[in-house]
Length: 492
Ligand SMILES: CC(=O)N[C@H]1[C@@H](OP(=O)(O)OP(=O)(O)OC[C@H]2O[C@@H](n3ccc(=O)[nH]c3=O)[C@H](O)[C@@H]2O)O[C@H](CO)[C@@H](O)[C@@H]1O[C@H](C)C(=O)N[C@@H](C)C(=O)N[C@H](CCC(=O)O)C(=O)O
Ligand SMILES: Nc1ncnc2c1ncn2[C@@H]1O[C@H](COP(=O)(O)OP(=O)(O)OP(=O)(O)O)[C@@H](O)[C@H]1O
Ligand SMILES: N[C@H](CCC[C@H](N)C(=O)O)C(=O)O
Ligand SMILES: [Mg+2]
Image 1 (cartoon, helix red, strand yellow):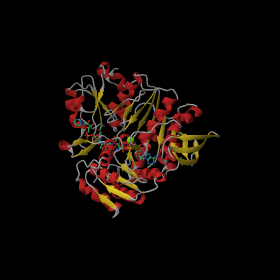
Image 2 (cartoon, rainbow, N blue to C red):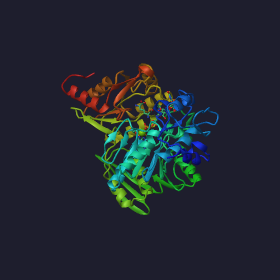
Image 3 (tube, rainbow, N blue to C red):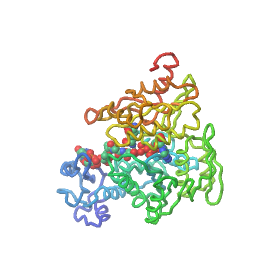
Image 4 (cartoon, helix red, strand yellow):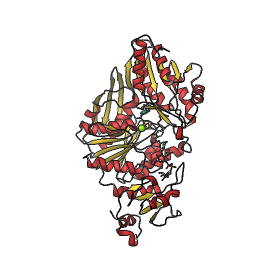
């Protein structure tokens, strides 16, 4: 690729520099190689414009930056919104990308929905992948973690890499951070999904309206002009999402009890899953979903809507929904204690998600529900007490513990959660001790829910240079605690 092509895409003339070859894109000056285009962005910690000279010294031939930035010795590709311009330019370079791409946003359920979309496509015979919190999951199901979507260059190079491996269908997770930083876009996106909206990340967004607006960029800008918006219809914010997508002129496909694309007529929990009655395009279908929890129905049907929106025949799609496999760390049963209490691991880390996870387990509890959870440090503090309230409201016993304290004092975070949880809650620092106490306490009719970390593999303590990730996996720890308690030791 030549510099002239990039300049032309921005309506500029590269002049004599036009013939210069482009060999990649970078947003961190330390990663710049000769022939790269450098994106200089104002960040939350530092100003990338301060590294323009260093990037040029390392061989950058063009710099995407605000018009007022000083660029000497390379072509200045100026734009008032340099992150967006950079995404569009990089997408011209990292090509080709998979032919069918969909994205999912919402507060909860993004990872589950992209993973289910991948599974449905795969069962329908497509070479499909998903990208999100769990990493990049490829057609042979291998998961490469660390390759999530930390930045736009990784995102687009993952997409073109998947395409080279023969992947034709990709579902990716579009977080509000990613959307507001133009981190996951540039390529054609055929459909966008919206799951729900509730409190999270208000440390980063300026209130719920700002948070909603960040998510809605998916419909107003990221999805293609002739694309489809697949919207879970039964959330408080659903109608607003429909209005936004309509204003943009997207095709609207709603899903849920109020859904018109897929109408959920009935949902009956069964011991191992739930029986669903739905209507799509005038036809009724009965589906045995092999997963528990109303929230997984929302995600499964949203995923089905996305696959239908990309042209797969309905009979195949609904047949695949009945064969969905559980998503890692989402209501995953880790172990059954010797006394007979199942221990579930779930990634709920917002008040709404905790309520949803508790509601999912409720029909299966004949004794007590014991909920163990904490709240992350250096994240939205306002969600801590409401998480405590949600847990206390739905459980017979709550144990408040640690979940990635990061740069904060773990005991202080627990105190803030305890304010919402009230006097019924126990406060046990040390996540292993808390899980052990819950399992030791649980009798044969009880269920233990360990929420907040799901698939995570570490406990993050400290920040900056002192940051450490201590190995910690809720599933493994629950199994170890259950085994220790069975042998008569380890009980708290
Ligand atoms: C607050 C936030 O979202 N920050 C993200 C953002 O960083 P930033 O642009 O603000 O970066 P900065 O450190 O201020 O630097 C500014 C610019 O200078 C450049 N730079 C910086 C230093 C240097 O020596 N040289 C240099 O060139 C940087 O590459 C950057 O382009 O862009 C970076 C890459 O594009 C991200 O890695 C980084 O995520 C940080 C690590 C983070 O913790 N993010 C979390 C909150 C997050 O985004 N989470 C969501 C999930 C939320 C959910 O699902 O619920 C996610 O999508 O992962
Ligand atoms: N549709 C839903 N409605 C309400 N809660 C949900 C829904 N789907 C998932 N949850 C809850 O949210 C947790 C996280 O689910 P998931 O990882 O799919 O969401 P996410 O949106 O990707 O989260 P993150 O923002 O951390 O990436 C689940 O473990 C569950 O407790
Ligand atoms: N994507 C979310 C994950 C939170 C998971 C929880 N374990 C925590 O650390 O708060 C975040 O970065 O806010
Ligand atoms: Mg996720």
